[in-house]
Image 1 (cartoon, helix red, strand yellow):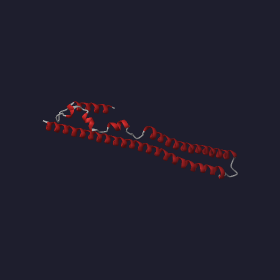
Image 2: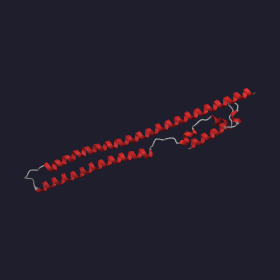
Image 3: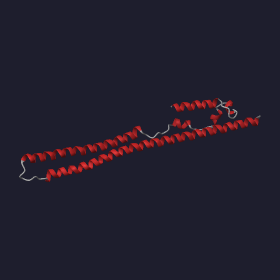
Image 4: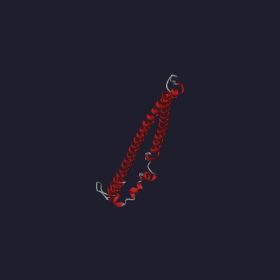
Length: 180
């Protein structure tokens, strides 16, 4: 009888160890998948911010080139002396308006580029942070055989393939974790 009890005890102990090892592997896999998922979110945010910043940089360059062209027209662009004064005033007024609009375009493109970059940083640092498990969660994954002994004699000497109260308690605990 003693040898049979020892065999049942050893079998249940090995099963307990195996279950905990499987639980730890499952949790580690879940954490790794969660990290990969958040890395993808972060990469998407970086791509969207880069798209906006690059587009604004192109607007900045094109606006600066046109702005230079307007400056050249205003400083070196001459109309023939025989041109009527209203034509000269229209020319200077349209060149000045173009200068102001292009200056605003360059200014807004720089502002949009900076705003997009800062919003991307805000998203990455506040909302899409990498999930780091808490110490409480890590402690719940620790494995000690004294926990096996705390189950009570009925669970330690349970016949193989017979569900005991420990298995039911483990199932309830799993359901609670899934709901969270």
